[in-house]
Amino acid sequence: MNQRTIKAAIAVTGTGLHSGQPVDLEFHPQPIDTGIVFERSDIEGSQPIPASAFLVQDTMMSSNLVFGGARVGTVEHLLSAIAGLGIDNLLIRVSASEIPIMDGSAAPFVALLMEADFCEQEGLKKFLKILRPIRVKVDDKWAELRPYEGFELNFEIDFDHPAIDKNFQHAQLQFSTQNFIEELSSARTFGFLRDIEALRQNNLALGGSMENAIVIDEANILNEEGLRFNDEFVRHKILDALGDLYLIGYPILGRFNAYKSGHALNNLLIREILSNPDSFEIVTFDDNVSCPIEYLPLKGVAVEG
Ligand SMILES: [Zn+2]
Image (cartoon, rainbow, N blue to C red; front, side, top):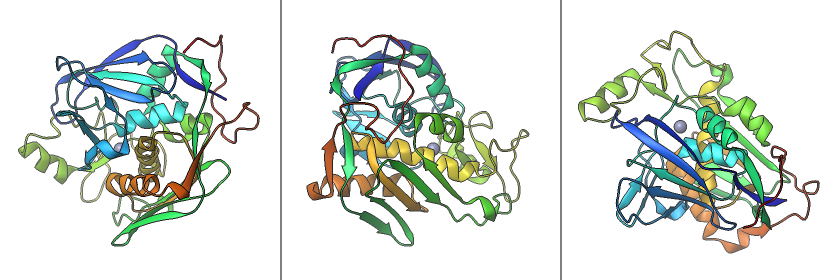
């Protein structure tokens, strides 16, 4: 099982959730063992910003990377798409301090990256295999990773809201690219109307609308088209977690269980794992059959580097 990058560069323009301004995004193939790297195209001589758990500086509503004085915010939906597609090496150039919000899910990024197509690289894909359970807890919220042959994500939320059905507050994803695309990638982010109004008074969420979020008021879902899944809220929490967990630097072999977790706790969990070298090992697989995770089959030939 080899590493993957995209075949050719591709670009898109979206809207910044907070600025409300257009943001340009470019994706470029990268050599083996580069990992996922961001770069600010609007800052001259900007240093590359690696997608690393230790560069997450604030988790107010999203995961934000800060390095060398430059910031790239709201990386989790894009990282979820990249993790979901099993891309190991990629450069993301962005023209603002936030990744565009698109439709509030990972689906537009998935479509774009699939259009760029993937290629296999001459280097084995590395996985981070969990060897013993690690759990982090803040108040009644917790998140953990446990040993497991494959990658499974379980999430439970506890929202007491008339529009959020009590029967749809738990979800599970048995990770494969196919399952990710079909069951998770299009689950949108969500927000309360009152919070959005408060943010706008502080010049934040200026790009936020029902085009890029499920918006709920005290009693109802305001989007005319309703939900994409009955349990879209908790599916989106798994989508976020998948993106947040990819900041560990590798695809994970393990079982992720979380109760009311969010960006801060997800980040704490992977920092805890990386700080305990006996809790994981880096493994590779000589062929696709022995790998417990299934990605999309590749068309075309392997390229150098
Ligand atoms: Zn999200």
